Length: 500
Image (cartoon, rainbow, N blue to C red; front, side, top):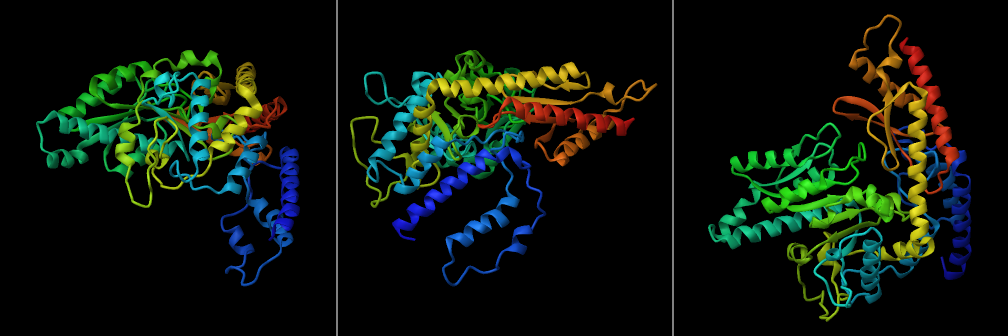
């Protein structure tokens, strides 16, 4: 393919993408294929000779499209949003054009410097404390800074590696143990999570080789100061070394907010690295009215949220900040002669390879830059506020209906609910067994998805089965939420009729 054909075919692809988005709500959001469907449709060896673009385009429609779950559909309410937008796509096109492997400043200065600039932009937009910014008001370098990771899972791992480095330095500085003895203590180090923390926390402990302690949340599904302090004391009595704790601003199951200030108190007293995972709900902090919910994040050591979830920026774009980059670069920085460092006197000369697990990195700052410029702060806030309004509308409609129970108050764009026990009771029943209610709600989520018009997922909260509806599609409108409500009511009527 030469430049002339690329120009022609590229325009065709742009048209195909625009057509896809314009008609997305007309197709079922969930793929309906069986496992192994594609293997049966595809050749079992790569082609020996070149094939035409037209043939590939046909295969996109006939072979690939049937197996796509349409995350961008306005009728997709599963998990959390995966926001895309046309400005972000255009930024990604430029990133693909440059195809920079941006591991340090020298390999492409604009790649590094734009990331530094837009991460400070974004930090200010969500109200982060100045200690997390790369550049001070006087233009000199700060101790902290932001970096774009591929996912919140990567940010979790990077934070834990920095935390381990910091803990080992403190143990060595104490002078009571030798260096060999301090290194041998690694297997005694323990990280703390709640039973609602994202699975990346536990995965991180598996990767870095430390212990994990999962703490039960309270009745509001929050990790509390008291529970954390008790867990730490228990582990210290057992000879373990606490070094890391994760607090969550908007958990996966319920969008609950942990006791962020209380956890900060314990982390400071026990010398723990305090990481805040705000992968989903962090985008809400672009709106000042949500910032009182996040009091205490200024005391964290690291903070992360995903613009690719709820801030109009195509995957992958996970924004992470640290209050001090020293432990991060100490843990992850490895020098080789073929990776020359450029000494500079400003905050712009960074080797972001030392802020992440892999060496290579894409020019992800471009799409974030496009989004922030083409939507503006006002457009981003409007995007967030409309989804919150839709979620609260749905919550009120379910409560008014009378057959549903809201499991947690709606704060952001997530509505967690179930058919309540009294709606399932037959005439003369005193009470319905919890197992019966759970089974009915499991079948309820299956029936909703079997209907095919919308897609969402079920979950389990302390043994109680419930349904999650995550509102947040870029192209989602009020009509999509109204369709969701219609399906919810019809499916509930079917389940209740079956039960009775």
